[in-house]
Length: 465
Image 1 (cartoon, rainbow, N blue to C red):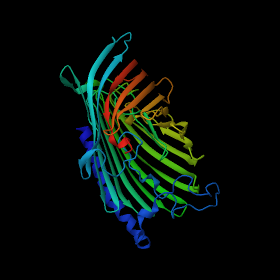
Image 2 (image 1 turned 60 degrees about the vertical axis):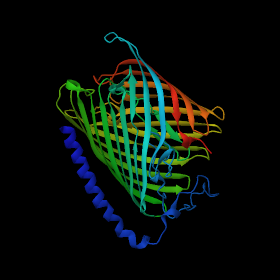
Image 3 (image 1 turned 90 degrees about the horizontal axis):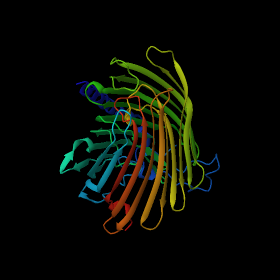
């Protein structure tokens, strides 16, 4: 009932925001009428000979040309093409499907015996992508189902959905709404890369790698309202809400985050953008399953963060972005705390390979751990096209709570894909993941884990014809 109440509250909040925000752009519609938004696409990196000249004006009329209007494929940094891939009917299509076998080995501890689980996993992706006037609506659904001993294993059958709605776009205005919902019957994270980078958009996406014995759900919603003040500067207001629930019975824990950000960005050149951002967040946690709870009493922690931001295209193949600032928090029954806050991202395109690095300090509600403490997370990935048909990647990551003596975990992963049938878009795949978790939460596994996955994947959109 508490989850339904939180869900209803967030829906009414979202609807109210949509109705209010959709009226705002009309204030500037008179001066923008007759302009073709299709002509406002961002210039390709390095397209101008004056990119290193700070006095050179942007190629597009307004500051950022709304480069962030990309809609990404669910769980990855890949761009949703906007045209149908695979098989489908009009705006509804199925772009990929995978069948694989998994071997999951959990090492034993002093209190828990080791175990090995094997199953066949079926996974697909369904997309509804439709243009609405000057906007766009994209709904993606990625279900997975595990079968062992001739029956469906609910503990390994997961649901993942995302909604991206480009509500309004003009040369000066950009309004978009996003929502992501994930349900893991048992917090095993199989089928998505832990860090995925895109050298075309210089974007990065991180997915959860924490594993637990209990079910886990998370829903995150946000709305971005952006306005170009001039040819170089823009402001954006982004309210957001996250609800998470993990565990069962006495170990059930819930977390909610209410907050938002206000940012100002200035484009110093075609290759560089700087800015200032303020974030405010109320983090509400409750339940014995939370990482530091000694009672079931709920706790409220307020975070305020102010930071400077910067993004720089270092060369035609290097892109870096990040932020640095300070965060203050007021946990219950404790004095105010201060700590440095930062993010950093690096994307490098090599001749036949790419490199990605991502660091962030944030809450963990959408990453499998419900706690009232921020956590540091760093991920590294390297991808290489070994031949015309063989792709290989390797990566690793580490996560720990900011507070001393808190939770920590790390992973190492490797993936291989071999193109078996170019005309059909069929790949043979093999994945290996090694994980370690040192948890102080009853909703997460403790110890070492090895996961092997091998199978066939149908991805016709990845093959050039």
